[in-house]
Length: 303
Length: 313
Image (cartoon, rainbow over all chains, first blue to last red; front, side, top):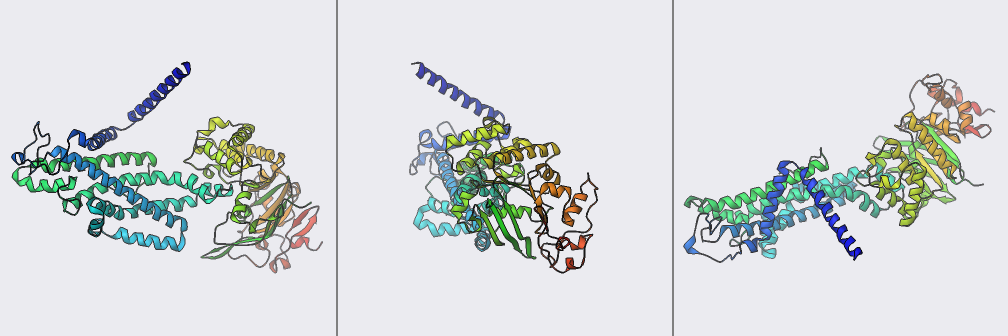
């Protein structure tokens, strides 16, 4: 019993310790970062709990209630066919975030792979790989992205095509970051010292390269997410993304723009606000992370 | 008795855009079991290249000839796996500037343990050995494990690096400029640590341009000038009366002796002369000096000098 009590007390102490540490960490944050974290948390929780808060039926048309202004029965109003805007915006955030995160992940993986190949092989391989990367980077992201969506939509569907299109247009900056880090790491004295101490390739990669690369890649990944949100919304807005009835932020925005002249300001305002808030908060958080990691580090990625 | 480490006619040239930089020309040195060898020379004389060639840490654009034998085994012919087992376990390097020789983003505990594990010790053995070694150097494993290298003072950093080199109980420790950038207190401490390493029975090869450290350490000394060994012999004999004119002028240049610098510059390594490299600056120059490169001639008890002045005897 005493052992059980001890374990319980121990885990309570541990829990309190973690709580305290998290608490003191938050107290150290600047106000802007705290606000950004709070707003992003609300958006993410809202998006995750969308089905509980406001269940959505894409085809539930309510023609008696079209273009209703925000009220207690429809907190954000209704759209031009009478669908509840709150439900659509929450589900839109869910889909947009999901596409954006997986697109950023695709970009991070592709960029890291290319960067590792160029940075470790060096010489001619590096020259060829990086020139190909330059070709990709020199294309207009958006036009190239449209081409990719058109190519892949028949095979992958709307969401998959957008994800791939954003992923395949955003990897060059990551490849450059990873290659640059590796190039400079290779020349660092501690790498020579590790080799002199008997380290093989695997140990070098795992123990010495990875701890330096991970923060840079992680940060670049996070900075790509807001980019991806923009791209997803823009493609959907142009009708190139998800099927029109699906709730994505870009789709709702496209609908809203048609209702603006009829006086339905809320349909464009709320999804627009969601895009803005999501990108701004992620950007703010990433920026403060960057400051902490490396006060003078200037990323190639900008918002 | 065969030497533990035997370097014969080692030549190292770097292929660069400006031509071949000859960093070492036919250098031959040997280190016996438990012996201390000092390799002394100015910047660019080839000291660090020698240390790095012993562990095969040279870049790809390099041409190496000659032989390096460690306990009879040809180091230059080792396959990657065998080479990894030699590095750290049989030959350990104490690198230049300890602060940049450890990974700045990892805690010291992990790096120390990793070094010990890489030498084939188990986790428990590693901890025990590290605790002992660091203890002897006046450090506590538990109190530094959680720290990063930049959080330690210069002297502590040096001791951590020394402990890392010693943890595998290597046959020979190569210390590359162990005192560069240290103030005189730390030079004293480093000298004491190096003597300690030597007293443990490991052979020691110390690369330095610090003549005062060399004098304090003693042992045998090899003097490098413009990629060649110009004098080799007991350190005490060198500091008493050097046999090569370069050694003589070098000692005269010490502030506590005459403080008189040697006129002229050492030759470019891309265009080494076909004669004695020191001839242009040598006060005792005579005809053969500008005609061919002298051999290492015996001078007196164990001292050899690459100077025609000793050829006649």
